[in-house]
Image 1 (cartoon, helix red, strand yellow):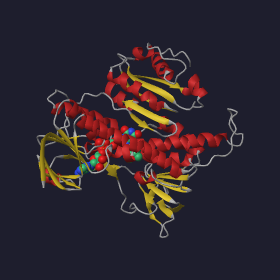
Image 2 (spheres, protein in one colour):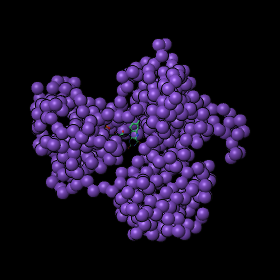
Image 3 (tube, protein in one colour):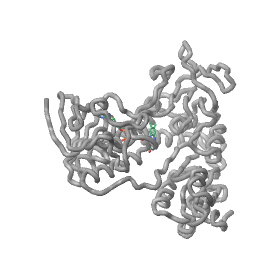
Image 4 (tube, helix red, strand yellow):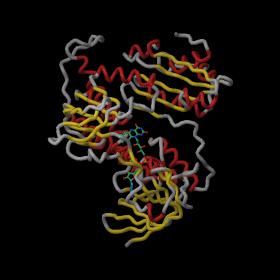
Length: 465
Ligand code: FAD
């Protein structure tokens, strides 16, 4: 049994863990990172990056498919395209593998030692790793748990055969003719819409009265309209019950209590993700939990001295950029810097068609906090750039305090609005007032002008509406 010691040990090389290790290494902290699989975690290997690659391919395919048969108003005419999904997946795997090497290289450059294998706690300062060459014992002054999350499995629809999670959905070699998606949250709709754009007949089964229920109804309206255009059937208030005996249909209880059978080739279950708190000896160290997550304070410290936790294992929102920001902060704390969580907003993007972005407070949350608020909303139908991109459906909405015009929240729905998330986040972090956004010269013609116009609208003098 080999033994090593270090100042900082990070368990899990997802976006939380690897950013933490790189920053610690940059600051001269003697750091070891343990990863059971490939560097980059869920996000890089089976999450953010591969899903966005697949969504991009679906978008490209749909674009050209629309041009076939003289249907394009742009006057472009081509023969009907075909899609080789296996080739698409190979292209996506190439991107993932380049980024895997990139992360490994960055860790090396920061002089972080990487140990490949599954880590288990022995006690609060010691971890055992089962590596290919035997057991490695690592003692550390400080340990960061960044073990991430895994898809939730339904007991009556266990993964296997036609029942798949997002991980398998990102590696299919053929586009399923019929796809049932159980769970109408962001992962289910991002992937469900991508397959619909590639030609699948998609049915979404959602137990709640609405899909994308974390967003307000006005914001999701353009997405619902698009789901209709794509021929996606959305069953709300419906409960998935199991797989038919032949394995070719999803059994569902509809909102009016009737039993239905949805013929399908694949069933994609996206009913949420659970923190990975099992299998690595949490019971040995007995950390406090907040529900199913590890409880942390505003410095990501757990209930045990010297043990931090970051990323999906610590709670919502389970997003890569939250994990990274926590990782960077913890590395600086480990290096002796004074840091704590002081972020005003964690922007969230849903890469459906059209895309959704939220940052900061919703109108209801802002009202509850500030009492009187101002709302400015600007439609992309009045934005020249959106028209030239055939993306007129959607809007930008700004929510601000009525008394001092401090911006509290920004939401947008529309084609390509994911690229506006950075401006929204910056405005909130900088404590922008409506006048700051209205007074910033926004380049023309861009969708960003909709952001400026929404601020002007809240101030009562929008120029283009
Ligand atoms: P993870 O990325 O889950 O990494 C944890 C790592 O720890 C894994 O590599 C695992 O192998 C390793 N590990 C666990 N236990 C051990 C152990 N005991 N020993 C050794 N190694 C261990 N987020 C976004 O912000 N934007 C998106 O667009 C987005 N899209 C997504 C799409 C899909 C389909 C999915 C599934 C997720 C998506 N997410 C997105 C969420 C994002 O992937 C996660 O929030 C993010 O990966 C969390 O990072 P993390 O570092 O906490 O954990």
